[in-house]
Amino acid sequence: MHLSRSILPALLLFLLPCAPAAAEAPIGVAMDDFSYTDTSAEPTNQTAAHERRLSAFMAAMRRDIEKGGRYHLVPSAQEGAAFKVIGGIQKTSTLVQWAKVAVIDAGTKKLVMDKLYTFRGDNDESWERAEMFVSREVMAALATPAPVALAVFDFELEDTTAASVSGSAASDASHLAEVTGSVRDLLGQSGRYRIVEVGGEAARAGALRDCGGCEAAIAKGLGADQSLIGVVRRISRTEYTLRFQVRDASTGAVLARGDSGLRMGADYSWKRGAVRLVSDRLVESQQAAGAAKK
Image 1 (cartoon, rainbow, N blue to C red):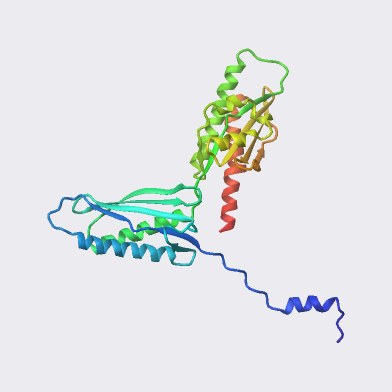
Image 2 (image 1 turned 30 degrees about the horizontal axis):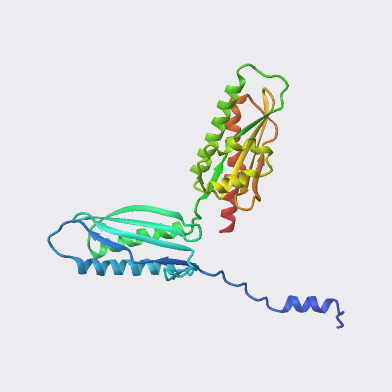
């Protein structure tokens, strides 16, 4: 059988085995031995037993973290560590001990986890149970990205109606404050964001919707990773639209945006509409994107 020159290369490409994809590099984790303090005032000196149990505790935690190959332990001084785990254990009475554990994102210097645990008992079995629980908590924290520091600026009103209504300015300001507060609460409670205090920065900058992205620089100056501005556009007394935009504070790049389209309802419904829009277009969409990557 004769194969044309155009068909042969394609057939060979199909028949040749594909090279396996490169395995994802394990993530570096630095973890020093936890400290240990005994404030129980027991008459018997248990230093040797506590040192032995703490050593076994740390060895088990290190095995648990490296199990599965997703993470590998590196020296604390090594810059390649993506996370650092620190902690300490304190014995407060004969049967009660406390474990304080924190996980720090080495790149952003932000706390990923900071928790205090209590466990009962001071024998090998109680220490083993405590280690298994703490290890699960640390592994869950390592798999969870640190909250994004987000500056949520006050929502602004763009009023396109021709006629003004007496006393509407105070009412508009009150409803806009409700919108901003509700959106901040939503994003803060999502666990994906840490809301940065804005203060009077937005007021000094003027209308952020028309400043060409200046909110990103303001957010960076406040120590935020990202900025969010929102606008309520009033079409009539019973019609309005909502929009928001999120930018990277360092680059000014637009990361997310949402537009509600025309909605019916008086000004007291702005809050409900804004929460729904941000929830649908930002919180839930990012949750779906995160689930798709797993």
